[in-house]
Each structure stands twice: as structure tokens, then as C-alpha cells.
Image (tube, rainbow, N blue to C red; front, side, top):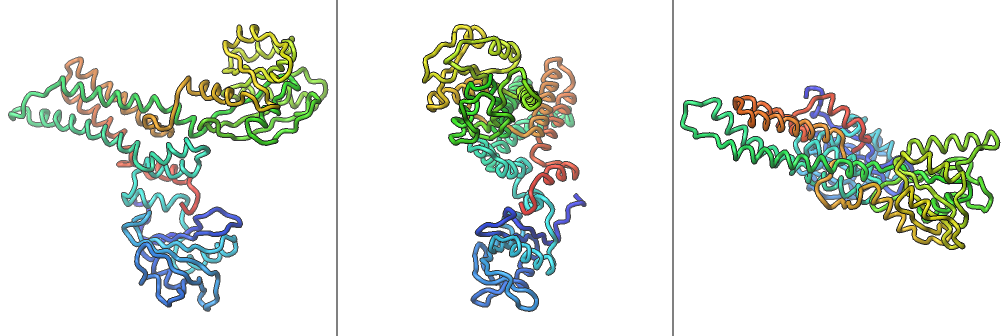
Length: 461
């Protein structure tokens, strides 16, 4: 931990760059109030070091020559009841880049150091206000693309996953304590180890870990989303479907086949799933160089897709081009959709049902049955049911690896128990499992790990 300097005072702009109504410059550290005294002139003449905690004061930021830099509100949060458990000062200034930068430069000139990415949250972790799972949740909240992803991250920040892991730790610690007492003092009358009860406890922890690990895929999808490609022949209504899903006109729609000459991507929220939806050019044999490039790009997008919406024109019979697409996509997850059900239907649905099992009829132009398609998409992703309010969902790959480590080590302990091996083998496996859980919570960590985690944060958080 020698790499982490917690004795100095850090500062950074904590709001987004660019023009906005308000911009925040944040300071944290033992000299935060002292620096604020130098740069802030309150309307009532009091210095920030005299302010009570959790109070906000009106005044001006001034330089050494008493020139006013900006009219601001200054908030004081005293240690240890602050985000970092240090003295924290936040300057709410006007949101222009010049004003925010000038305020930041002024506090740096008066003794603060520019914060590293994520350093405020890193200090909150190092000073014990939050554990490492909660620290990582802060970044996930910032990156959340949907309400469902936000709920998962907020639950982790509030300690939902940490609480589960701590319960597992407590159970394993109790078992290890009993085993080591019998190992260290076999001659003492400690009592016979109840191996049946220990087995039950280990299996309960193993089951709990399995349940959390089982939710990883759902958590990952809600966090990162999936790529869905709309595929089909020219003029089947791909761009109209994209617009219907977006609920706005993003793609140009005309009756002329081949209007879309390039892929168009948008991110939308479908039942809590962040979906990167891609509208592709019609999959046909290209007639010129431009069409060749468009079709090549469409094929690349289809190859990368997690799910394909294969669109058919319901007002026409299935032709060779449709059949070719069906054959090419037979190894991809596909939702078959018949468009233009507002027109007289000529398509042979039984042929589609033979290949896909389910066919959804829609009218992208009339915005009909779009919700049925959204339901089918969510069902295809989650194989039926999902809700962000069910069990704790893990979405972080680091957590998954460590949970699997702990699960495997508990399995080793159970094998030792079943084979009636010495208690030392079982105790060691369980202590190693505890270590894996400690790694998740940050009870043990390396400098390299923290650097890797917090360098993904923005400066000022």
C-alpha cells in the first residue's frame, strides 16, 4: 500500500466537460479546508474552516490579487462523514470550461494535487467506507445503459452482493475455526467434530455460490447488452423496423429497394436489455462496387451478432433469396419476423415455421405487434424469464472468476471429507476459498489490481 499517498489533498473537476449550468470542482484531504480558506470569499465574511459540516455557502472564488474568478456555492463535508472519509470541499461554479478550469488551477496553485482517475473512490475504499465490490459498482452506475443495469449497480453499491459474500465468509470461518481447533489441540477435550453438520454448511455455501454464478450471464447482458442485427432482402422493411423499435425516424425509408447502403447502429432499451440494434443493407448478390461493400459489411455484422432478426415481406412469397438467407443463418440465433401484415398476405408461413418454430407477424409501417417482437427478443435472450429484482446478479468478470475459485475449493474440501482425509486438507481448501472471497471484497489486494480497476474511472470520481 506504500504506493497510495493518502496524506496529500487532491482536486479535480467532477462534472462532465463542456458547457452546462453547473460545474463542480471537488477537493479531498487534510488541507481541503485550508485551501478553501485561501480561494473562497463568503458573503458573510466567514472562512470555510469555520463552516459546519454539510452546509453550503454563497460567495466568490478569488485569486491572490482578490480578482473574482466566479460566483459560486461552496459545500463543506467534514471527515469522517464524507465520501472519502476525509475533509471534502465542493465548489459549485458555472459550468463553462474556462470557469471550471480556472477554479481548478487556483486550488492546485494553493497546495492541492490533481487527482488520478477514480482516486476519490479509491480513497473511500482504502479508508474503509466501501469495499471493492461497492467501489466497482460506482463505475457501473456511471456506465449503466438501462434502468435494469442501473438497479443492479445500485444494489451492489448498497451492499447486496457484499452482504451475500460476507455471509459465505462467516459460514466458512466458523467451519475453519472448528477444524483448526481440533487440528491444533487434538489432545484437548474440544469435542468430536460433527462432520455431518460441517458437510451441510459447506454444501449450503457451495449452493449459494452456484446460484450467484448462475446469474452471471443475465447480469452481464443487463450490464453490457447484446448486438441484434436486422437482416433480410432489400425492401422488406428493415429500416422501417429500426425506426419502429427506436420510436423515431433514424433510417431513411423509401419504396425504392436498396436505399440503405451502409449499416446503421443505435442503442435502445428493450425490457431492460441494452440492445445495439444494427440495420443492414439488403442481403443480395451485389450489382456494383458500392453494393458489394454494403453487402460485405452486412455479412460482417451478421457474423458478429448475438441475435439476428430475419425479416420477410409478408406480401410476397418466399423466393430463392429468402431460402438462401435461411440456410446461411441456420447456425445463428434467429427470430423470424414477417413484415407488412397490413397488406394482403402471400407468404407461406408454414415454410418459415418448419425452420424457426415461431414466426412473429408485424407491420413496421403501422407500428403493429412491435411489442410482441420485443417480448420475443427478451425471451430469446433470457430463455423465458428475468427480472433485475430476483437474486443478486453478478455482472463483473473479476467477481465471476473469484466466485468460481471459491466454489472449486469448497468442492475440494468436500472431496477431502468424503474420502476421510486428514482435517488439514479440508481446512486448507476452505482457507483458500476464504482468500478468493476476500479478493472480491478487497480485504486483500495488490497495487496492480487497484490501479487496473480505478484507471477505468473518470478523473473526479
